Length: 354
Image (cartoon, one colour):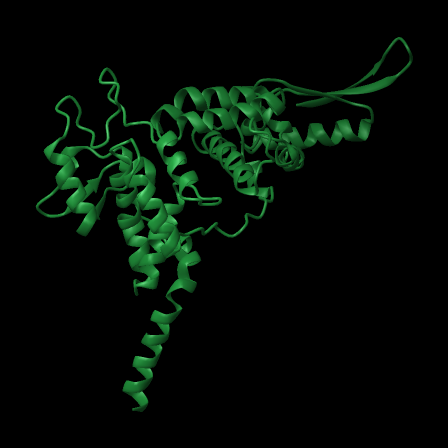
């Protein structure tokens, strides 16, 4: 049953309080300045309750965004150890900015407002956040919303689905020229760190990520077969990696003097901790001495992919080597294989037309 009561305050201001009471459901109330609004709300709410559509709405009013984030961080993120630390920080930003809002009031327009604030803000490094970074923050919140929709029943729809994501720039491709490669390898070989040279050679010859290389252990390396099997990859799938030529020779030499107190190929100097060596300082020194401008360790992966393409590998083959599930991430290397595709077209035409 729905009723609307007229209320007059001491200052003479009139308001209308709508109340909906239905047996078996908690009472719902709301106050409006106009009687027509109160009547409409009462009718809509009563209809929603009778048609079993009001539960999620009432849950959205009962919980705040902060509660949603806290529950997600506590119950869900521990099952995602790879992204736990980063997403906890990203969700913490949203909690600090709009955590006080009830879920019913977290609208696409509100999220868009703070998306823009996020994009215009600066990181602790003093740099403006890139569109890709903003999208990662939005993705973290979106997944939390989806969990609240599907598993908790706190909200009916994910408001993030109606918020436009910033357009990301085309993937950065910085790769080494022959001269740059020779200069870098020379400095790595002359580095005081004995692991730097084999690490960089592995990155250039296999396209493995820094974390994958530094996490290599002797039990996943098969020297006779010339391969390593990565069990802990970014996309969560196990991936075999071929190690051949100079890289394999270096790993074989390394196996002869491997440390017995660690399973890691490239362990830290501190024997008390089972962690890989700190690559940053020797790497940055080698890059500086080689005279490389705007070059990061991840660019070794781009360099390897570019070399694969220039030597005739197809995009599908490059994706398989790098561990990408789709071709989207490797399309940035397509222009490197123009000569190869031209030869394919020429071969097909010669067979058909003579």
